[in-house]
Length: 406
Image (cartoon, rainbow, N blue to C red; front, side, top):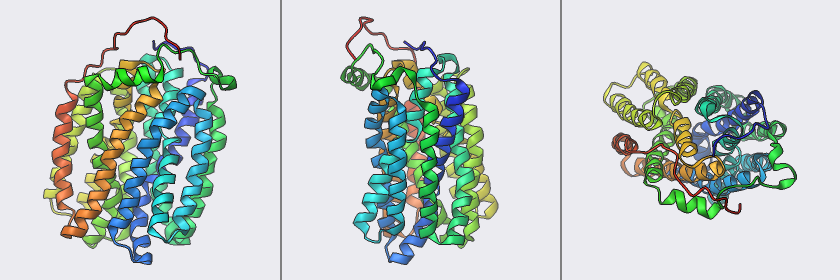
């Protein structure tokens, strides 16, 4: 089920895939830097901006399911090109749209759909089809680390673009930059999808969906990933404003997000390596427990630039380190034939959590004047996710080996 002939070299996959994820994830990680400039210029409250980003995360998750289906059916190449074009159009819309509804449609729906076609589920499908099972967790860690490096690289760059060019022009520059995904996608064309034909599979899409939906371990994995989305997107979007509320200089927020990205390179790569030696469910349980502890200490301790940087570094190690073990579990249980689609379903749960985290962050701040309640929710959810991942069964699912039409 997992031994697939390579049509692309490992180096080619990792170089092109990592560069794509660096661009796609790096740009989105800096969106929190636009919260105050946009809301101040248009006179919006924070919930208005937060709602658009929340819908972006939900759109990313929803369209990720269908992007995964298309990538599994026709190959990732076409999906990546479409995603890059949508991304550029969405960033232009974000730059020049002053009406809340249009802002939601461009910044929220369109950019979310673009991210669905340019990030992990699509790249991990390529990794699953072309890299042997014993090296898959490591390769997924490399791709996730690239996304983390993108955050470290792009967030300070975005901060400087806003400072030097103004926030409108900064978004226009990013719209041009994201089109670099198109030539990179040419390096990920798979010969097995030549002529638009899908390889023969042992399950149809509906059979794969029914099997996964009824499998308890898949449900627990999705529930844990919901928590991941809640925590990281709340922090990523609202941390700059949280720090500004406590009278920190703007560069503290930029450095904070940059440190998260830098140390996440270490965390995601380490998670991929550990997945070859330790059960992935144990890695996930440990990550969620550690997050709950780290957030608790951050909320209780005195808030200083030093405490912010320490929190960002430690949280960075835990940030996207959930991605390689989560996708490796999906591939290990169900195989790689429908990996992009099933990974998209798990990620949809992540994005529902992201929606709740970023939206509640804005709503509860406007209601209470503080982010305290959301911090406490993030702690409680981390403890729950840690417990949910422990009983996951990672063994390959047993099914009838009789070939079914694709």
